[in-house]
Length: 115
Image 1 (cartoon, rainbow, N blue to C red):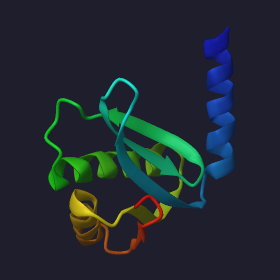
Image 2: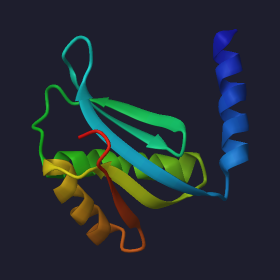
Image 3: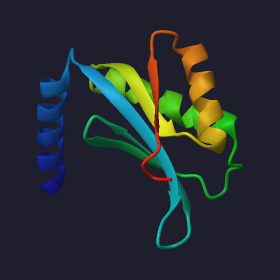
Image 4: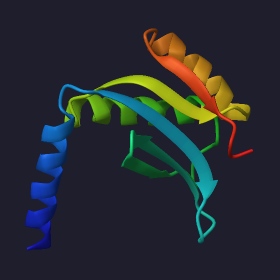
């Protein structure tokens, strides 16, 4: 029963977003169980949470997750991601530069409020 409702809600969300423009954001932190996590959000929708505890915390790995999440946003949600926001420090800063090289049209902004 619940699965059917989830499918209906997701279909309505997709219909509302299709053809729109979106902003993306990612952040990395540890949860209560001390697992290292990266989550991506589109506008106000949580798109994906990656458990990266077993991965090396590198710029390249972060970029792979971000590009995969952008692909989900564009294909599943039918939006064009035009802005990406992440931390202004370390791997996230380098990832932003690499993201702009891969997606030349994208605007990049840094979130400094978490520092």
